[in-house]
Image 1 (cartoon, rainbow, N blue to C red):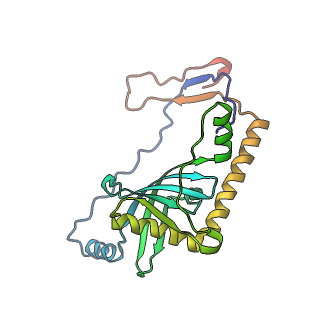
Image 2: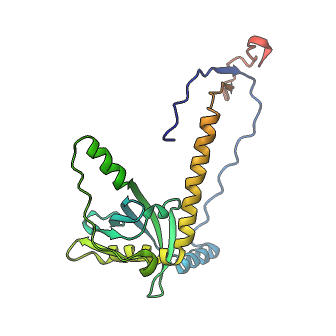
Image 3: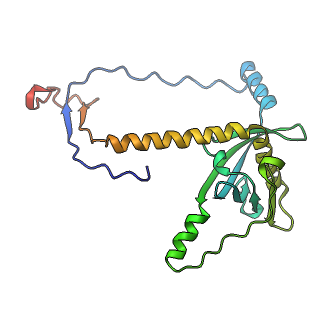
Length: 237
């Protein structure tokens, strides 16, 4: 966890050779049912009818001042379908979960698996640090974006003269999701931030101490080997 000192100390590992406790062997796997089995065919047909394709959403997000986000999206990982642009959302609120569903304006329910890399930039602190080191700070130029509180979620595509339709649907669906669930997503993010700070404070007050490790080892299927337990210091076995 960032901001915490490294854990220091010594770990002692002790290995005890013990008698085979006679654990039962795991049961053999169940035989596969033939595809001609009526029950198997019925189950496969049920899955086919109910199957909903999961689309993979690859997103690279840079959040500025928790008020706007520069996005690069790759639907299904296709580099040739990259779409870049700006959003008036804080995409930190999309972290913390891996899948989501969106009911589009067309009535279709689309399921996504989200793979997102995200970074945050505080423009004030970054500008101050660079000025301190004699470096001119040039903030990324973002287009005019509607105010989230009054206009709701919105985005502007800045790269790609003919944006890929699948990528556009992906970005639109993320904003539609936020339009419905944004309050809950923001609250969940704040709860994660608070929990992380509390956890960090706990570890600063109670630095973790390495614990010794004890391993119980026995050999199986080797009858030629001695089965007498090896006694260690203190009589442990």
